[in-house]
Image (cartoon, rainbow over the protein chains, first blue to last red):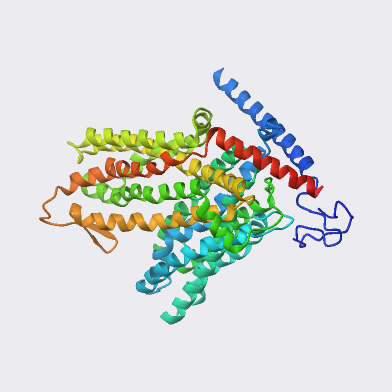
Length: 63
Length: 477
């Protein structure tokens, strides 16, 4: 995260506090639901890819 | 809403990286633990008494250090989470301390004993300190990586499996390197060999370990206000399921005594120690294969049922092995295949016990969140790491107590038969490497009969926690 999602203030990678020093926004939990959704989509895509590889491998073996 | 909870949040890549990170962590750990006495006494030239005293003091220090670090972790709140900052920062000093520890003989080759002892104490104390600050958040992350218990289980399996493979590398490298240096085949002294290996473990190992901080995410929402220091300890004693798991682990120490007698059994009863490699090979392979196959058991039974049933199954196998070999325990042609069968059963049981109780500890964190509104990954997993260290020393001490009873005496690093002891030592040894430890180990199942954090109760707790976490997220938005 380069900027605070609420006030737009630049945040250094070394700034580790949970809240923005300017507006107090919770930098860890802000927009968490959407971020979790994104993670879930990515995870499903990765597992779909893995399943496809495994099923191709199993088919090859059974031939 | 329940549908959301069952979603997978941790992808294949992140699961693998979490495992690889644990592998990196184990490279340094296994190198230090496996070569500890040999390196310090033989290579560095530190007096053995000083090494023994330091181990004792460090063991006592761990009793305070681990929970203290756990409470520190639980009180951390940052924009990266409460566990990941430690995992990002710790690999650097930990890697440096690994290099400095193994660099002792190079830096202080001709120094006095006092200087060597001071150097050893400082470097090992700092290494242990940084290792603990890394280890507790690492295992704590297994509970915070996802709200989905299946994601957590996959992460733990990946860590245990990959660390078992990568962590074994130092053992394979050190022994040939030592032999090559000793025989003058490579133009390096032993001190230089260990220093180079220390640099490799410190850089490659810790580089891999840092992946746990940079390539993972904490997805379980923490309370905004951190718990007070005293509350961290109070919560620990209110966590009944965690106390039951801890008690079971401590009682289970007794199962570890078999390992102490295995080498002696192979040497004295079968005549060839290297037969243990042959007997152990199927078990090693089965141990790795168990990790992916464990999912089948997880779908059918609860965690508690898996632990109980697998332990009973393994105990029955060892009883059968004992009975089958009790008239011919000096015949390698019969005993080696029997021990291979026992090894396979032991590996299945061992792999399962490496994963399921860790997953259960993650569930006890959910339980404490339900009871207090605060998650205590740090404190809960500090108990896991502390008990792990404690049980290793306890099982060695127990084995030492049993030795004279079965006609065995420890002379230096070796075990020897006591003449005219009046007991059939070889028969007792056969029992001690087969069914005695596993049958006594069944006592460790007693606490599990009082453990009720499963099924509908666990689901209800996780559902309540999810609601609480949703309200924290809404507040943040």
